[in-house]
Image (cartoon, rainbow, N blue to C red; front, top):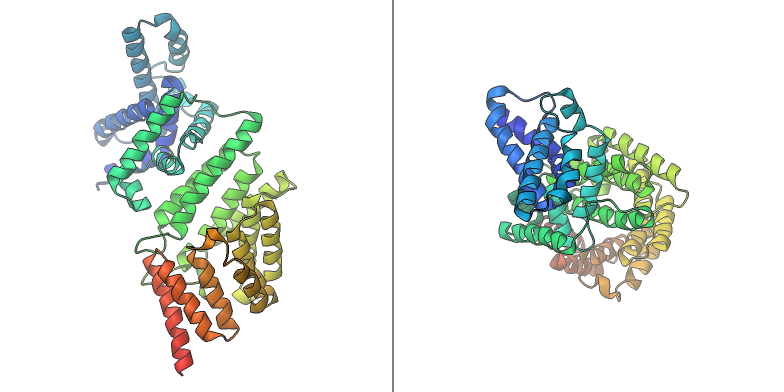
Length: 426
């Protein structure tokens, strides 16, 4: 990719969401807005190589997309004969689009852009859409990813992703979803759905559920970018800050989570000098903001507090496991879940000994939600091995490997089971 093409691609990735959001505010249709934003990108591809990148690429793209939106509105008015109905919108929009003036650039950078972006986030993550549709549309509109990039990230065929995106746009149009952020209580309820999508995207990048690679860093980075955007747009929402804190702290360990061959490196064995100290500082700062905003810590803030315990420990042996176990207990009360309880088993096993942790893990074996969850048997295998029950530990690790969908994870579990067999043979 040539230098100018790379610069255009970077500008688009950074600004696509704002451009789509600005167009959507005028046309009130996400599908049309995305088409108009793509037309603005085509104009950039035609003009920027010869003219050079403008000082504010986002403002340039937004201005072009808005003008195209006005043209689209005029065409709709002519076709439908609804001149009076659209006249007010056109006049208001044109007031922001005086050609070739500094006001045009400033209009693309004002607070309305932030409002538009927040509206777009709530639309992309609207509960009327199925979760896979929300994820695909969010990565498309807010991540600026192409259909092919999303397909690679989600490990599904490109036509499947294309269909999800088309269906999501159609559903939004048919449901008449308004281009607005919800208010008051509705905002709090809908914000939880937005948090869920960003969290899900990050987790899939942090530990892939399937495929050959243990992590998909690009996907995790997109989620982290979305979390930063959301925290900036909702500064008074404690859980937006808590989610950002959690993702910053988790992302700080990514460089140390695999070896040179791409094989997983577990937390206890990671080289902590490879942890990103800038991300840790950012995460701890976001956690402080979250805790200052609300005395009652939400699920993401609690998980961030757990991640902070790991981040503050200079060595694995220095980890404050008793505090982590207590935080998992608080999280289990706040948001009961068998997965949370399994994580509490790990922390209790470290704080009080493997027998105490195994008692919690064994009690979860009858939970239907964990019947195909390979981490349950992986945790049991680790706790059994620490108790010296190597034959049982090996069986648990092999059972976990059989359930694992990720090739790297499966190989790690099989290697640990083989090491126990070798130990028994020795």
